Amino acid sequence: MRAPSETAAGETLLAVEAVSLSFGGVKALTDVSFDIRRGEIRAIIGPNGAGKTSMLNVVNGFYHPNTGRITFKGTTRPKMRPHEAARGGIARTFQNVALFRGMTALDNIMAGRTLKMHRGFFWQLLRHGPAMAEEVEHRRKVEDIIDFLEIAHIRKVPVGRLPYGLQKRVELGRALAMEPELLLLDEPMAGMNLEEKEDMSRFIVDLNDQFGTSIALIEHDMGVVMDLSDRVVVLEYGHKIADGTPDEVKGDQKVIDAYLGVAH
Image (tube, rainbow, N blue to C red; front, side, top):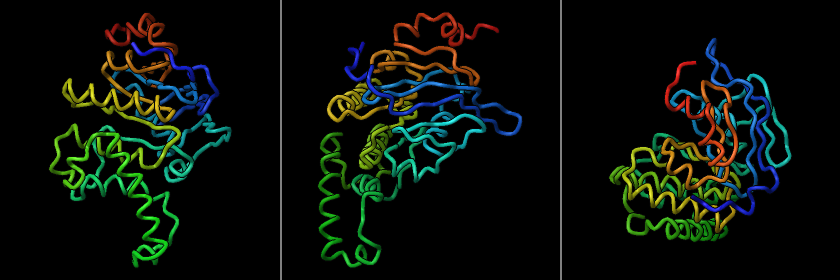
């Protein structure tokens, strides 16, 4: 199990306060509250249909809650658009890989630098002077990410030709290119074999330890959750049923019942 993070008791980076979300008559989230501290790995777990992805979609502005609020870096908002979340320092990956399949791994990761580019479209078309200098600097940062994720050997390969595990690594690289303060990972290890999971786990821990990036992680593999997380929040049918350290959560009877399918 991962040693307790020094920052696990640090300042609150993001707070979810009494958030509820409905789609017509279907309640996806009901009065959910929790926080993410600066520098920690925070797992969000629960059975299928618990509302985990809906929660991430609220955090990054894709969904707007019916009630409740989100506070990020001290600023409280009732709603925010995804591009505003990205500019503010929130990046994410998705359950299903969302890459430009005809583009190379390098170009996909470069796409994550778009919000960091300041030269206008005209300069970028010319690829000369200030725009060229800016692109060289961004390319240098992307190459650092490629080295960090150990994917130099596939940097020029169209991602549509890559195996699934490497596609997930490229998607992580694109999120890292945004230099997020909060990284949302939606089932980053789904569909991976054991070796791929071990590699991805190592990258997540190194990212957190070396760069201090706060991470919110949705994952169904309980071994991974218990090994990586500083704290865990558990959802069931859109309600929060537990919140605490991995040891506290795995011994909670409500959590045990939810995963064993005990009737309510």
